[in-house]
Structures are given as C-alpha cells and as structure tokens.
Length: 567
Ligand code: DON
Image (cartoon, rainbow, N blue to C red; front, side, top):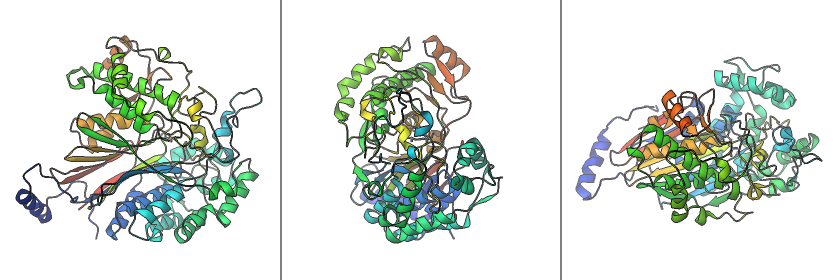
C-alpha cells in the first residue's frame, strides 16, 4: 500500500541516517539519498502515475515518462503527444545535468512569410488553428529518449498508466469544463477534435468521462516500437495525410527526421544559489539569469516592497529586451550566450536602473504592444530516493493547441509555430516580439519561454517550473528569489505574481498581485500598470532540504494539481 503524505514523518531510517552523518562527517551534514520520493504535477492522475512507477522500482526518469504521458492524456488542453517539451534532468550517479530538448521543429516547407498575406499582413489564425499551425512533435521522441538513456524500466511499463487513462477515460473537472467552453467554437471546426474533447458539440459536463481509445493505440505503438511507432509507419502516414487534407504542410520526411537534442543547461548564480535552467531554444534560463545577475547588484532585503518590485521589474524589462533581439534556436542562429551573461555587461545594465523612475522600454529599443496570455502548458517536478530529479515543462502552446486531431490517431496537434516571430516585431499570442533570430526556417525550433529549473545550494535542492507563456520566466524568477530567501515550495507556488516583458511596456500583475499601495507607488515611478483579471500560473515544486534530510512538495493553489511526498 502506497502511503501518500503531504508532511514528512521522522522514521527510524532517518534517525539512523542522522547518526551515520555525525559519525562520518566533520563538515555540514548532507544526505546523499533522499528520504522520500516526491512528485508534483498539474493533475492528480498524472502525479499518481509517477508515484505508481516509482513504487514499481522505476527511477525519476521512468516516473517523468509516466507523468508526461499521463498529462498528455488528462490535460489535453496543455500538452500531449502532438506537442513538445523540455526535460531538465539530474542523474545522481555521476551528477550529469542536461536538458532534453523535445521542442517542435518547423516542417521543411515552412518559410518566413508563411503566416502573412500578399500585403504582408499577419494572418493571425493561420499560426494558431489547424494543422498549418503545428510544428513536428517532439514529445514522443523525448519519452523514448528518456527511456533509452536514463530510465530503468521498459518504456511499455512507464507508459502503462497513460494508456489506461486514455482507454478508460478521465473525469471532466470544472477546469476542463471552463477551458473547453472557451475553445468550443474552434474545436467544433475540427470534428475529430470535437468528437473527443466536447460532448455533442458542447463543453462536457463535470464528471463526464473523456475516453481516447485512438490515442491509447497510438501510445501503445510508441510503447512497442519506440520512435518508429509514431514517426514512421501507419500513424505517421495518417497524420501527414490528414494534415495535408486540412491545409497543413507536414511530410513523412519531417516526421522521420525529428530528433531530440541534449543541451547543456544555463548555469548561473544568485547570492549563493546555483541556478540550473533551460538553454536556447528556450529563452527561460538566459532571461532569468540576466535578471538575477542584475538584481545581485542591489540589496533587495534592505529595500521597501515597492523599491524591491520596481527593481525586479526593471531587471525583467532589460532581460526581455535581449530576448526579443538576440534569442532563437541555437542550431540556426548564433546566440551570444556568453556576452548576454557577461558580468560587466549585466552590471552595466543594472547601473541604468533608476530607483526613482521607470525606464521607458522604447529607449532600450523599439517595438509595438498587444498581449494575451493563457494559463496552459504544464509542468511537473520529480525527485527519487537516489537523488535523481526531473523538471519537465510540456506544451501544445495555447489551449488545445491547434484544436486539430488526426482522425484515428487521437493526436492533438500543437500550435507552437506561433512562438516564432511570424513577422519582425509583431507580437505573438503572449505579446512577445522577436527579430531575425526567431524568424521561421525549415527544421528550426521556435523560441520558448518554458523554464524548467533546479535551484541548488550546498544544502538545499529545488525543482521548479510552471506554465504561463512569457510570464513563466518571471514566475520562476520570483520563486528563485524566494528560494534564496529560504522560502519553501508552498511559498514559491503561492507568491503574488507580477511581470514585465519589455514590450508591451507595462507591469502586468495578477489579481491581488500588487497591493493598492504598491500600485500607486509604482505608478508614481512612471510604470504603466495592467491588472490581469485572474490569477495566473500553475507551478509545481519540490524541495529536498539535505541538511534537514526532509522533502517538501507543493502544487500551485491556482490549479487542481497534486504534490505528494512518499516516504
Ligand atoms: O514555449 C513557450 O514559451 C509557449 N509555447 C508556452 C505556452 C504556455 O505556457 C501557455 N500557457 N500560458
């Protein structure tokens, strides 16, 4: 019987560990093995899938496969087999840290102007709906890679919970109902998608069972044949045929050419915390590291809450400016990572922060506005008792991705192509602007904001991440600052959130994210403020306090996720 506890209990095993520590160590006492496994994800069934696999002898990587696959089934509006993701991993045996990049790639027929009309105007829907909006999925390849190189169990076993959920169905929650209601019109344009995710063309009632038998067969094919089950053969043929029929440009070669890439994480430090985070094609690690390095120039602890927030906002503004100008897929453009993380460059940028005035973004460079961010995509964190860990952020981009399912496969296509800069300095779904570095090209990966992250000191290990489009980076940044202040996961996931992304030139904040007083004072410093009418983010976090030998985990109170610590 698996005992699932939110609070860790002291056991005899822990007591003997403490004794051993005292005997063999003169320095600070750190546990090499964790006293518990922990899984935090955005859906209780996905967390249970991870725990099930850990209890059957799997390691954190097997559990990550189980959680990722399960999320793709039970949170179809957030991620899935037709999408992609990043898995940041730490292997305890040898300390290897790497990011598995399963980001989607642009098909070979993609080109820079593919989402513009003859007058060069952006055709908004084209990069958002239907198969033309979809990049070649990386999720199946990411799972196969994890199983082949890091897992201990056969892929079939790690995928079993997801196959079960797809076959037997999962219950519609109020969140599912609300999000399906939001996308009903678009889903209804694609009957295969509407048939699965809606109930007679309407948002399914709460408690309705969503079954995905075709998807179960697709996952089984991956379990049996690995990459060939998805990227070659009948499923691939079906996806290409259907995509083409509905205006898409995928080819069989695009699918068979898909590869995950292992990338070295971005490593930075902030006041004694080592930050290990997502490298390009994610912007997350670089933007967060830049902001933290700028903030290190100030004593945030000595500041009033208004001054602290003003400085954080100004650091975000400057880091997101560099995102817009320099960042893109490193296999296609020369990302000047060293220069962007150069200490004197960032000290110089920090010097331009004026304590008494907001810096207008326009004087840092140019660009227009309009925003819009969803709350989809998904994140999970896993720690096993051997100390292996995974921070995974997975996505189909906006709600239900492209809303397009290929008949007979159950695969819901992503609309990640919109993360490219479809036209220079024209905002994407998150109001983000980009330049040449993030222009569309065949085989290229769109720039992402997904920021799976480890936070490390000699005594504390944090595993964290969240969905939230461009705001992912600022959410993880705020969590990193709280970690550095000694906060626990429950605090990171509950922090009140605010954000600046250079353009639009405004401080965005969630409902109650800034007090009335802070709003007045920040406005007085020249900031334009914009309240988002709801709370945003869905952070999933784990902390292993090696000094206390205690594991904590927490799931964002804004979502319906589940975080567990299993002793
Ligand atoms: O990769 C990215 O940055 C986006 N596709 C993530 C989308 C996301 O977080 C949606 N949630 N609001």
